[in-house]
Image 1 (cartoon, one colour):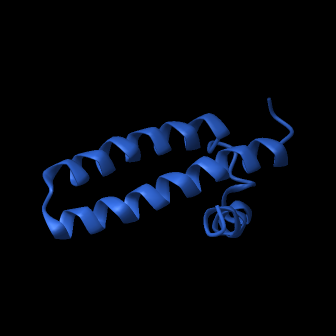
Image 2 (tube, rainbow, N blue to C red; image 1 turned 90 degrees about the vertical axis):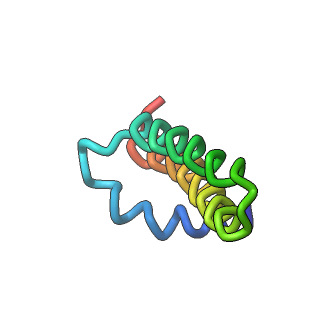
Image 3 (cartoon, rainbow, N blue to C red; image 1 turned 180 degrees about the horizontal axis):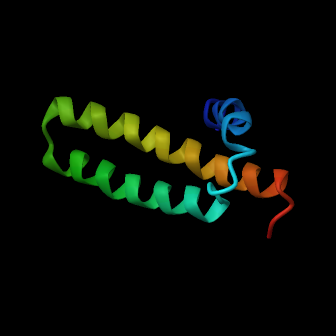
Length: 76
């Protein structure tokens, strides 16, 4: 959370005013990306493990971002 929260704060201004990107859309993207990350990790190939680990970090950033976007838009 030391990395993901600040990274999400940097991404928030880029998507905050894009109306079609909703917090639910960000959450759905995070879930989809999580399945892709799991697929990479499940192979057990060292280079795929690295890609999977990077994707897991991106999933966590998106998870932080959806809450921040909902608070910014005052959505429930």
